[in-house]
Amino acid sequence: MEMHQVRYFLAVTKTLNFTRAADECNVTQPSLTRAIKQLEAELGGDLFRRERPAAQLTELGLRMLPLLKQCYDAALGARSLASSFKSGEVGALRIAITEAVDISLIIPHLEQLKRLFNRLEFKILRGTSKEVGEYLKKGEAELGIAAEIGEDWDRLDSWSLFTEGFDLAMSKKHLIDDQGNFGFEELKKCQLLTRSYCEHAARLNADLRAHDIDVDHSHEISSEYDLIKLLEADVGVAIVPQSSPAPETLKRIRIDGLDLHRTVQLYGVAGRERTAVASAVMKMMRGADWSRYAES
Image (cartoon, rainbow, N blue to C red; front, side, top):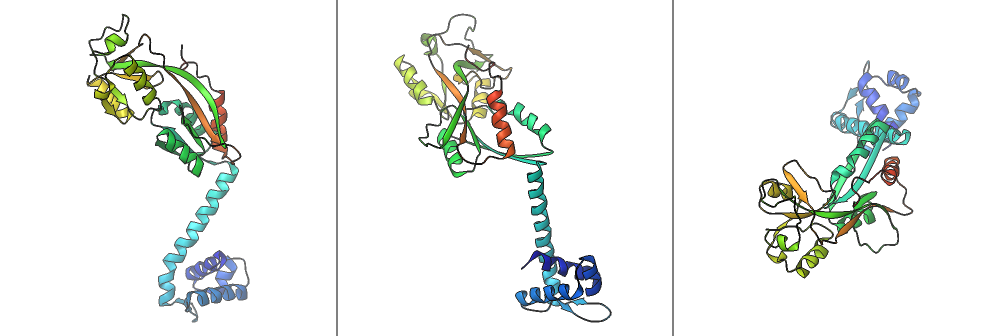
């Protein structure tokens, strides 16, 4: 089935006249008639009763009309969308971000993209560092943001954005004195909430165990949203990266002696063609000033 055959069919259903339909489609009547006969042969029956003064749709024609119109409209939509992408009117971005990275890191860049493209369509994928690596491998994401993917793949490119340390986050209602020194001895008295989705969770837990802190009886949390809600309710305290969101309801303090940091990186796939949007985001992020997040 060819799209011009469907177009001719729809023109005849509108005019109920082969001659006028041919004029509307800028073809000769024999060409239009021949194309419709080929369509009828493919569909296995007549679509029109060729009567005078007007053609009439057969039962098959009536049943085919909504389906062929939907097919034709979809083809026009696909062509229009392809043209918009080619001209740069529409931009698409597929980016994967680990659960341990705050989405606010990319929001300023999305705002810039909205000014560059008339229409911006993006898909944000979340997951563990391993899942982000898989999204990139399979082509489900063009770019990835993670502290550490750990994927041993020679086509994986990475660019460091900033390196940051970790703080202790808690409710402002918590009784800890945030003006004095706070170390591992003070941390032993607190109920810990552990971020199981963090790429550095195992490393952090090992460091805490080395200082005789009982992480095995901590509350394990699997999302940043849940963590913030539990901190606000003063259920416990959590060790979080310095770029993690800090609502007004929370306070943060440094832990003396905690030597833990992470480097947030932008990932891409070498040799794979990128969309205009992905290329723009990569350029923006690599050239951005990340000093507000960098470890002081």
